[in-house]
Length: 293
Image 1: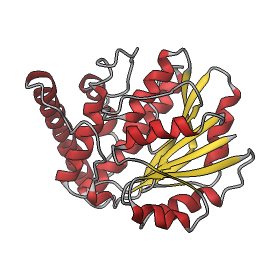
Image 2: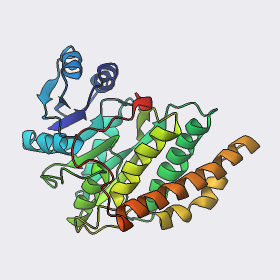
Image 3: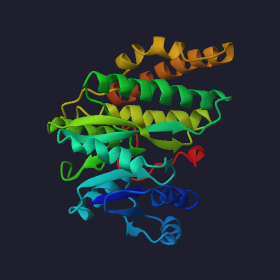
Image 4: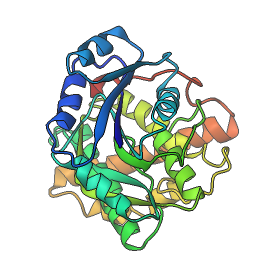
């Protein structure tokens, strides 16, 4: 049994497309689609598609996922995704076939940017998904090393993870590290694509990246055996690959600005989290990045 879990918050405009992308697939195994959301607008829209609905308590995505883990005990594989993205044809079968290997505990899909590559922020999203995510995961899997799965689309072997900390900023990193710490491998299914609209302004970009990158600093707090993909040191080692990505002078200039922006991001995170001991975000609750909707 496969449970496809779509977590959403105030996504009435996009939840339908997210659901249809799964309903239109020829999934080989018995499956169910579950939408978990706290708001009536999203729930009412999801009801039109005859899927299972679970209303959460509006305490954030980690709490919604914990509710999903509790409600799907009988399932063998859980596929986790969001209500503001949509997946490619046959993505479920591509993910599920990875679990023929009993050592695999999680498999992740490939994020594809829908943002306009002719804008600076749009270009950044393509570079970070093509080089930062796709190339990095491909190289790590080839070397049989640990990868962090993407929360936009990931599948996990059920019952390995029972609960995640409700205050975690990067649920995908926490889940990946939990699975890895229990002796399972994480792997990559690049043919299982997930299409995403990324931030189109610097304020939203910083908010999103501060949350995701900062979440990696929490891994040690939870005492997981981490060998994550994301840190300032590891990103620095990828600068040469990033500088090979642009196809013209304008894109090369944007790449230099991105390197500076990422340096600024990690500096802010280090000062806030390590020196000033500030909380990067409120402990629970959904955080919306408006320009991605």
